[in-house]
Length: 454
Ligand code: UD1
Ligand code: CA
Image 1: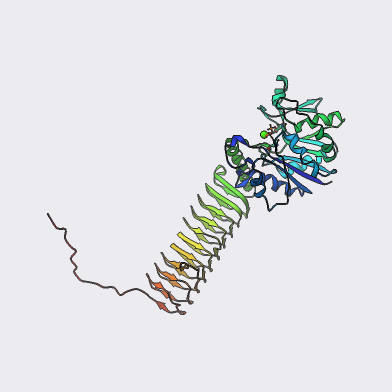
Image 2: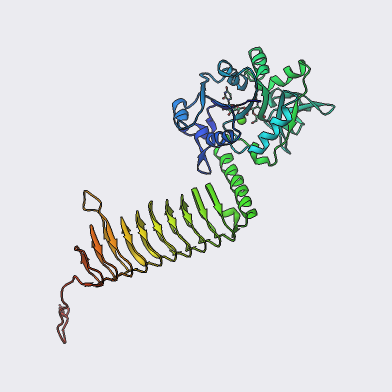
């Protein structure tokens, strides 16, 4: 059976008090609507229809890489009206999963369960039992069977006691949507076309309503203001942290861990507090990440140790490497196995060979460094002449003295040595020593000037 996913995302989100449309607010580094779209894609739906309105093109443009059918709802007349505007493009057969752009965490497994449960009945809902159900649509049952959904504002005192609520996630036969939606009325407390009224229509048609509950409550939590956004962010992060711990990661404190993307891990990875991981990252066995590191789109091989407060972006790090504290790897940094990168060392678009070291204060940009070389403290590759970037090529077993300026383009041969404080502007041959600094002048028994007394 073909499945369509319909995502409601036309609401304004007034309570966010933001210039950004609500569905573009980020949760774990990705827009709320982006989470829903990712989940929809995993379901391999035949079609994803998103209803947009507020924030118009801003919302569409944020997802212009995605294969989505956009339907505009120019006036927000209610959830039933929102789905109704999709009818001209909605298939006549199959089923639709109806989701909300501001309920970002619903899991693929829950939606699959819903589709399965709804196959025979033709309509099903995700419901949740809450201690405090204030504000939600209540699930009215008779002899255990769902009869209707009553919105909080329309509910009687007795109905308001009901703790089972409508999460706003449905699976409905498309044929029935085509039949029911044109018949919705807005005669209710809010003067809106309620999608929830299709439940009573199904009952009138003699249908039974299937229902399931999600595995985790946070899956169906919506975001209406920044307090709920922050609370959901924490719940989502705790969930991710648990999943990683179940995979064998040692998180020193799961409440101080943030993953804004995907992390693939080996065994016995250890992550200290306040680490932020972004984009696509992978850590091999026994990788250790010190406190306060920010690591984005980076692969780190087994047994590498990253000391606190290091920042990596789009780097590839070999095994058994030691980095930091306070190291920075920028895009294109490639470190081979056994490399040492120390404090205040910045590496950009450079490859560093097996076992080479740059232990203190250095800038290595557009460089190719061989194996077993040592880069002295304070060394700078002068890669930029104000107009163009140039390469520094350093061979194997090279010793660069401290405080060198290597003015690119320049080549230092295998086994070569440069003296401390040198500005190297010309190539250095293999095994040569290059020193570029003035001779030391010494005056014996020197008397410093004395302070004049007034
Ligand atoms: C809705 C349900 C309620 C349920 C609750 C769960 C209805 C009538 N009520 O109430 O039973 O408990 O969700 O969170 O459906 N939207 C549009 N166009 C519109 C109106 C809404 O796209 O014209 C979108 C909103 O952007 C939002 C979603 O639909 O993503 C839900 O709308 P909202 O106004 O938040 O519905 P609730 O009153 O919370
Ligand atoms: Ca809502």
